[in-house]
Image (tube, rainbow, N blue to C red; front, side, top):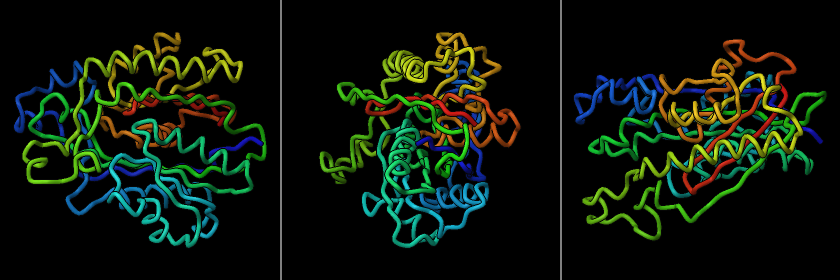
Length: 324
């Protein structure tokens, strides 16, 4: 049974943090950030906003796009690395606030690949008798970003995107997907404190262990290979050449990673959705935000093949190919 994306919605906070704003916080420059990442600005959540707040708005917009009501939802999956709290799940918080009582609700922790992992899980749910699965990718990375670390604080932004997954009534829908992970490199991109390994203490806070830590150069090397692999394997499973892809939507982590991935696939940049300049790296939210943008701007048309690829902490990576 093929499943399709029936509706899409996204939300980013109102506050914008530009590269020039960051020049006043750490030793950096607009030129340095732009050259190395492609980022010019990013949206930052308000102090009183949590991941469920962003998720709720994106979910409501996705429901409106799909012409569905909360009572129609069959399950809620939230992909996030920044849940409101360790438990209960952010999905359960969204469930009660959106008004979809007693439907399945849980979180997925797969880093920046989380939204695509969520789509695969939703596809399995639909194939097992459920329908109208709400998949949300949302992160507020600004709250775990160390703004004294010039190498990481320039990269991250906040946002949420949501999609409604349902049975396909026609030729549209997911054609193939590919997922994998390599936990041996876990310590190249991680948040050391806050879990059972290093619970919160005065010492852990003083050592700034509750913020994102990243070995940028090493992550870059793996990301380029992994994103390309995800794309190639996903296309191979569908027996479709890259030349037939109408739009490539990569995770928005770094413009150089995006360009390298497109080059390896021989896909011209005009067929690649790039919005990292305005949003930065929003982790699990980046692909649904980009997909919503592509649809709103009329960059995809009925019957188009769209390839989504992502790479994230874990390391995790994967791809999803679907016909719009």
